[in-house]
Length: 154
Image 1 (cartoon, one colour):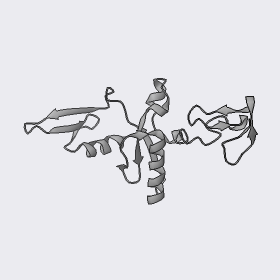
Image 2: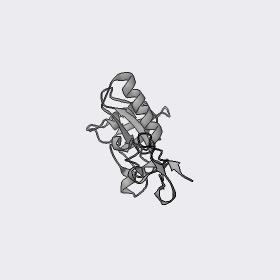
Image 3: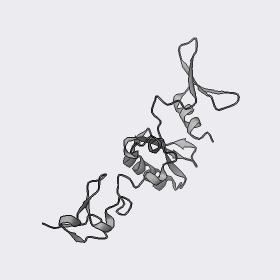
Image 4: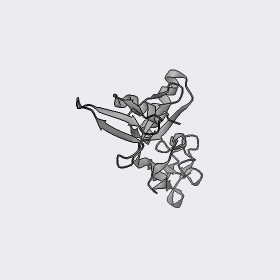
């Protein structure tokens, strides 16, 4: 039984040992398009837009992480942490809507990893977010403002 390579521009007939399954999208491809980079795999095509690869340092696949969409032109965090494919789609949508081309994905670090955040309880029981990288430390009463500030901290 033969199949057709799932890479649309190719559409080569494949069968038997010539069929290669993508471990990410599970499509069937010919030998030329078996690598995720050669068939524009929807699950990994956005990896080139990730700014920091903490998961790669730990030897974990990038598919297991969650990513913020960050626009350098808006100076804004566009989305909540999303899986790579969904973050990529959100990034494309932002680019189409605004025309901005400096949109990147930034890995949302797992909670056990410190990234310069300290919470100081005030007497009125509200937490203040403090950027430990700023001198003097800058304080935020809104978590979203802090996250926006933190991810653009150069």
